[in-house]
Length: 379
Image (cartoon, rainbow, N blue to C red; front, top):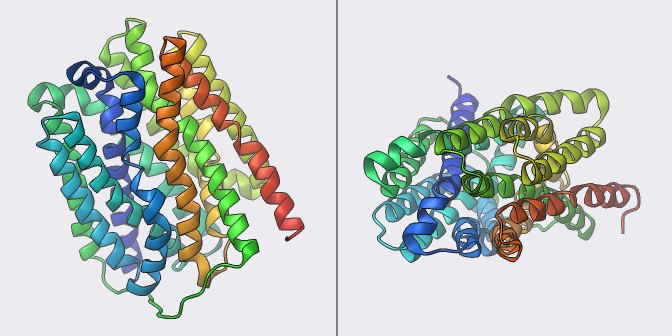
């Protein structure tokens, strides 16, 4: 296997570990809320803590990646993801779980910020879009795996077994990265994206944040919605599996469609499908139907958005540009789950969180229109 193939395999598994670690709290949400006396806002805060480090670390991570190279930074990230998962595994309180998620989330920053640059440095054209789609689509595999194995793992070893599994996936990703021969270029010359590039990257980051507000909202609060309606955990696991494991073929299909219909159409129709499926789950008890729509039609545009952000800056500014992109994303990822949880508390029903998530997801369309306007008329 060539160096690029080993690298892609490591990043793919790392994305699975990222999805698994992020979703582990949401998958165990009802039981964790009962065990530690958390309301929906508290549960949303615990979910969002995984994203919190990126608010301050994404941009410095991009700058550091220019100096150290992506492999070194991503390898350090896998170490932190492993340590954070182990800390959460031995935790005896919600505060310790939160601390473990902060450590693991800091490691995930390195992976997320550098993946686009590392792929863009090695692939071009349709290969780039395909590989980016593969990476974006494997995060939901980890999310779905979390829901699928939650019941047997927690039944066997409690919440610690879930967190330890996430740590093991992260450690394996790091070992695979060590097996990838070769290195990547580093530079000691600092350059910063132009004002126009920075603006484009940050608006693209807003689009990605809006997409993920709906995505994380659906996955974080669907378990609680189904629990309040009396559905058993097995159905919840099935819905999450359907809503996530279909993302990979859907994302790859979106990359293919964008080359034929244009990225704008794919993004707009994907956003509409996402919003409708999230609202549908909130107001109607057809969980499998809306889980399937969410995972397929509502996910076709994910790779298009990440490619848009990656290519908004010139190659020499791409690492720092993706730092800006993910600073916006991480700020939203840390704050929006708690905001959706607050909406659930105000509504007295976790379905309120889904309605809020759908509204936030819809911001992607006007933000995309702004990005296109900026491309045509640089400031």
